[in-house]
Length: 261
Image (cartoon, rainbow, N blue to C red; front, top):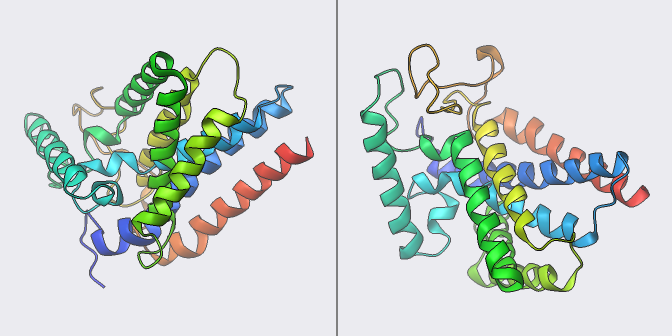
């Protein structure tokens, strides 16, 4: 199976990498809820379940900058067109900067930054604050459907299955009680999922320009990441045998803490 140095279209997004990204988003939200419960707050069932679904789906969103990603294929020609536009725009923006970065076109550029995560979360918060239950159901349902496509193998993640999961989670968003003050808080798990995606990619050899547009070593697009000897390749044995099992254990432990508390 071919692994392109910067994309991993066959091995990464369509298989393990999509799964690890979605898992990392859900685990980050569950861990945050468990920490909040330990400090005396009591997250509602709606906050935990719907937030985890949104974070899981959002953890695939930054890869909209490549037409071969799970999110780019999620809605056929529509999302592919969006992906091509995002990749072209990111590539043009990167070319206007210093030449310190690997030639990856538009992939792992502006959508893999802290700025993007914060901006995406803010937009969704505003949308859900203004749109109420309907907007919350749409955001939660679409995120859950996307997470389903990322978590399951290609043979089992059909459009029908993703749609069913999305509809169920969307219904839960309106049926389960959430925190007071409206649905603006859905922007928090969405932004968290985007950030966790970028942090996950920072563990690989390619790394990400996480702090753009801040200059690091004189370059706004400086690739930041894990210490060299600890980096791994997308879809490698390290990811399959270590990262995914660790995320599953962490998610199970966080869920147990919430139930036991």
